[in-house]
Amino acid sequence: MKITSISAQIRDKNRVNISVDGKYRFSLDTYQLIDLGIKAGCEYDESELILLEQESQFGKVYGRALEYCLMRPHSLREVRDYLYRKTRQIRDKNGELKPGVSPEITSRVFDRLIEKKYIDDVKFTKYWIENRSLTKGASMRKLTAELKSKGVSDAIISQAIGETERTDEVEIKKIIAKKRNHYPDNQKLTMYLVRLGFNYDDIKRALIESE
Image (cartoon, rainbow, N blue to C red; front, side):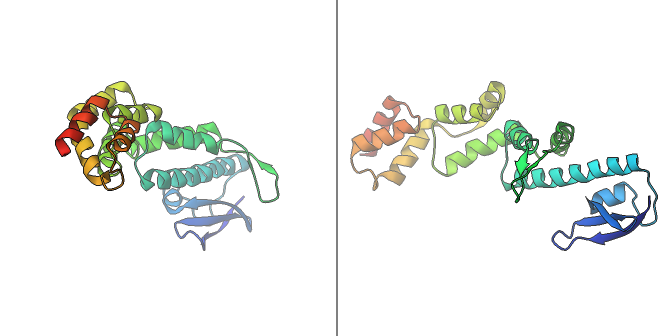
């Protein structure tokens, strides 16, 4: 069987369609095309074409997973869960079940993302602590719970918290200054801060100091 044409996709300029004996067979991204040395006129047997189809699927899943990782940093567990969902059956537009991606391919994608440093729990934890500090604000207790729920180890969390300059005391004062107009009543403001995971005594002290 012979590769008879290689044409750029209209929707995705980074992928090309591969036709075998005049019929579309699979697609590859341009990097795969070069790495695999595929050119028009090359001949393959059926078993080789099946392997190339697996590479096609790997490229598609890797591309989507990379987009997911670049939206914002994610923990290893988040990415692992994302890839697991790719292995499950889905219904197409006609309501028919389509098989998911093989676990072997998602495992390769996961390993490649780690190798290329697109996922790293240490970097993710630092990002999460800094981002939560800049946005809504949260206590160390709540940050720890959030990070644990995302699969980050206790050791990584403890190290990141030990290295950050943020403290609950500073966070409470920052939130009080920001939310005072929304919560003129100290009791309601206290309850709001408690929901964010801050210690009651720290809240009470900060409120007294802010008056």
